[in-house]
Length: 84
Image (cartoon, rainbow, N blue to C red; front, side, top):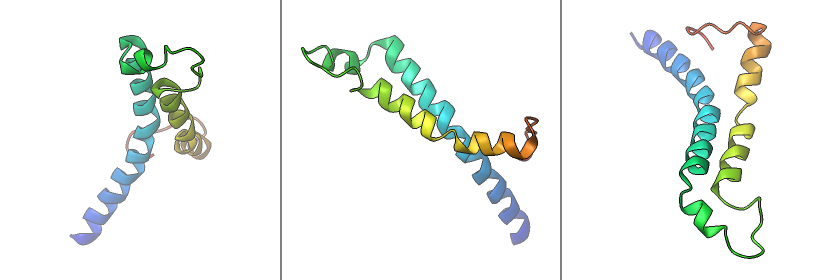
C-alpha cells in the first residue's frame, strides 16, 4: 500500500513543478490587464520600467521553464498527461 502511494506522490510532485511557469505567466497577465496597484505605484517620475509586479512575475515564469524544457527533451516533444 505504501509503495502505491509513494508512486502517486512522486507523479504528483513531477506535475506540480510544471504548474509554476503558467501560473506566474497568468498572474502577470492579470496584473497587466487589470491595472492593479502595480500600475498606480509605478507611475511616479523616474520609475524604472523593470520595477513592479508584472516584470517580476514574467521573470519568475521564465525561471520556472526548466521543467518544461526537461519534459520536452525527455519526450521528444510528445508529452503524455500520465507521466511528465
